[in-house]
Length: 67
Ligand code: SF4
Image (cartoon, rainbow, N blue to C red; front, side, top):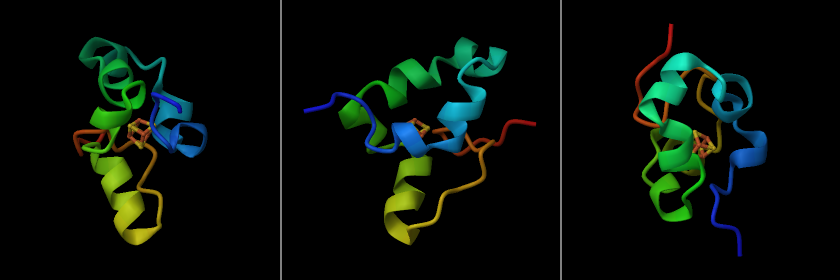
């Protein structure tokens, strides 16, 4: 079983912002995307599971929007 987020391969935030300096500084990818249990608390994954719709790519796992 994977120990990564189930949405990793189709997550716009992961695809587009994994090299972003703030993303790296905050460690969101390491904390959320690469940890299956923690990924379930990610705001993006919660929205996706509840609505079936992907949130904006610039929404971080904490719900903060990157500008
Ligand atoms: S940002 Fe959230 S939904 Fe996207 S891959 Fe990371 S943990 Fe999963």
